[in-house]
Length: 112
Image (tube, rainbow, N blue to C red; front, side, top):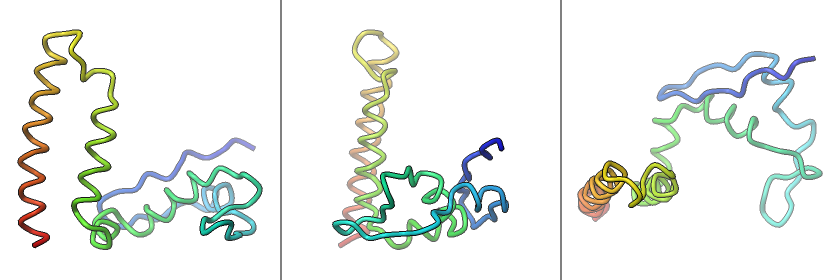
């Protein structure tokens, strides 16, 4: 049996297929040290299925904006395209940093 594609969360809630349900829903969930776990199983498909069913707009409502911004910042800064080895890479890194500073100021204002 071929593994179905991973669920793709969207802004609004979306369904998953039965094949995705079968492939990515653990047969058993256990709580180990405060985390969902079952024998070292990869839970990526399960988490993506839950996010797809929930929708990203709804998921974002339950977490502070500053945490989302921090996660986005860390992910973006790890991208190898953003580096000082090329003129455009350096320019994009500087632009990203300016944008993040602006977003952080907005988030701080909204969370006051």
